[in-house]
Each structure stands twice: as C-alpha cells, then as structure tokens.
Length: 100
Length: 404
Image (tube, rainbow over all chains, first blue to last red; front, side, top):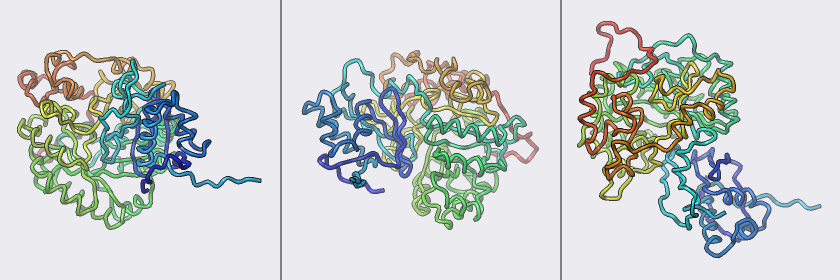
C-alpha cells in the first residue's frame, strides 16, 4: 500500500480495504492492510468520504456536502481528505464509468 | 455541523506506530467535547478487545495477569467460541487480541482464528512460542489479518527464564526463527518491562531489527500472579525516567498505550507519550475470559469488574451496552486524591487495575505514580491487597517454581 499525493481536483473513493464503523463522533476507519486505525472526527467528514464517488472531484464533493462551505471549512476538509489519502482510507477513483 | 479540531487522528491502539495528532487544524465547534472525552463516554462496540481463549498454559510465569495454568472445565466450547466471533464481526470489532493461557493449546485454535479472519475480524495473538513449529509458522505465514506476538521478558535466557520459567527463552527464540524461516513477515516481540530487563531495551531493539520484527514494550501490572511478584519486578523511579525517555526516542516501538501513567514526567517539558492517554476499560476495550465472563480490561479479573457473560441473554453486545458496571465506568471520574496535582491532566491518575490490586482507592494515584505520590500508600497496603477472583495456577511442586 503506497500513499498517493492528494489532488482535490481529481475523483476519489473510499478504499475497499477500509472498514468504516459509524460512531457518535463520526466514524472509526480501520485499514485491513496497514492495520491502522483512523478516527473520522465528524459526521460531515464521514458523509464526505462516502459521497466522494458521486462527484467528479473531491472539490465538488466538498462543495455539495460541507456546510457552510466557506474558505476555512473547505480548506479544513481538503486537509482532512489529504490525511485520509495518506492513511490509505481514500484512493483515486479507478472505476471507468460504463455508459450505454 | 462544523468539524471539531483536527478532523482525524491516528491511534496507537493499533499495532502500527502512529501518532495522535494534537494540533487543532480546524476551528473547534462550541459545545462539542474533544474526541478523547467522547471516547471516555464509551462506544457502541469496543475498538478492540482481548479474548483469553483458555486458562491452560504450559508455563507458569510469575507475573501472569490471568493466573493461568489449568484449563477451566467451563471454558467456551468450539461452537460458543465461533458464535462469539460472529457477534464481534456483527459489531464490526476490527480486531481481537487473543491470549490465554497459551491459546495454541486449544485444539480448535486454528478453527477459531480462521473463522475470525474469514469474517474480517483481524487477529493478534500472544503466545509463548512453544507450539510454533515449522509447520505452524508456515500456516501462519499463509494467513491474512494475523499478527503474532511472542513474549520474551528478558533479552538473555537468564533474565527471561527467571520470570517465565526454564526453557522458555529457547522456545521463544525457536518460534521466532521458525517464523523468520517461513517468511511470516513482521511479527512482534512482546516485552513486559521489569526492573531486570529495562536496561536491555537497546539489545532487544537490535534483535527485533535482525528478525525484521517489531518491538512491543508494555507495562508490568500487579494483576493475577503479578500481585505477588510486582514488588520484585516493578520499575524503580529512576527506571521510570529511563523508559519514558526511551519510548519517546523510539516512536516505532509499540506500547499498547500502557505507559500513560508516566506522562507526569513530561508535565514541565510539555512532552507526552504517543497515544490516547486514557484508561479504556469498559469504554473502548474489554476482556472476554475463557469461560465467557466479560471484564472491564485484561488486568482486572476480579468480581468487582465483571460485567456479565457472553452466554447471557443478548450475548456480548448486551453486556457491552447495558451492564451497570460499564455504564458506571463511562461516567466522568473524579480526580480524587490527585485533584491538587498539577500533572493530573497528563496522567489522568493512571491505571485502575494497578490501583485496585495494590490496595489504592480508584480515585487515588497510580501505584507507579512517577512523582512518587503513591509510594507510602503502596507500602502501607502491602500484604493486604485483593487477589484475582479466578486462579488457575497449577499447584506448586517443590523445585518446580521458577525463582526470581
């Protein structure tokens, strides 16, 4: 498992190697390869991680899901997603959309 | 909803050396308690738990926290054990720490482990290594989601065998050799820090590096047979300083978050050991013992800390969520006798189990308080401390007991 540099203009998705368990504060994420445990410390961040695939870019997902999407909050979530990418919780989306 | 402080943190409760982020990179929302405070209030299921599979053990370590030796006739059957695995999988418990006794003595050991892994419940198991022959090592090497911790409480045979019994050093090294030969990968060498091995940590580190293994150093607790050996094995105050620095200097060494009571030593310098630094008993961890009793943590096998049994109506989940004991442990605690100490925020008063088995009130200082605030109380209570409610020690035969 290698961490990938986070590009918020790209499309991302939750890694298949991740177990995500809802908790009152957000969620616990466990990476079955690296055995790392990661706390997602807000329900919004959990919604964001789960909603990534519905948007063409991480930026678009933040815009749609995070409220209020002011600059400060947007930047905080970009930073959070970058940490999650570093931990292997999210990965660049690889699925090719099948049309037709 | 605003994000509270840094939106994610990494916990060293896992086997990997990761640090807890302390920096608040995002604005704090008013009225939302910090993560650690929320964890103190308990989770719907433990993050991980310890499951002692059997009280049977081929060794008789003088500090055995579960006073193991003989199998208990009431131990969970294979069907019951597999059902416990299913319950933990349903609760999304990510991994379990399997111990004993010596867990590999159970004839269905591989059935239980295979079932857990197949249900996506990771397994980390602690063993003395006696039964890891080449065939077992190769079987382990072929499994996913499995970690192995070999216990070795002295770098050399003399130091180790004084605590774990004659021949145990050789058996542990043989198991490590077998795992290395089978290309198992990064197994763990697990050390309980005592006053006799604390000077050997650098040697241990070299040994671990040679094996491509990871070192795990945890705290000695006065639990089980440790009640009787604690005074002879516990770290001295200068050694507490020594190990505090050593852990800070070796962030890649695992500690199971067990030395948080030493954080008082960093009050002035602003240093703290990596970790959540909280007592997780009944909040984020617990113990299932071989007969299915659920305790607040692996170090308090005593009726006062028994929450229920996995055989009860509703199974494990009901015990975890509904037991009066666990509800109580999730209530905010009082700083008690430590309230006037400037280091209370750093150490949180230390370990509940260590206090209990040294006769100190639960809102008193940890017996190993690095500032020495418990020294008098520990000395005063010596000789009249509680013992574990379960004792499966084999009868002592003359000449058979390891000497300290």
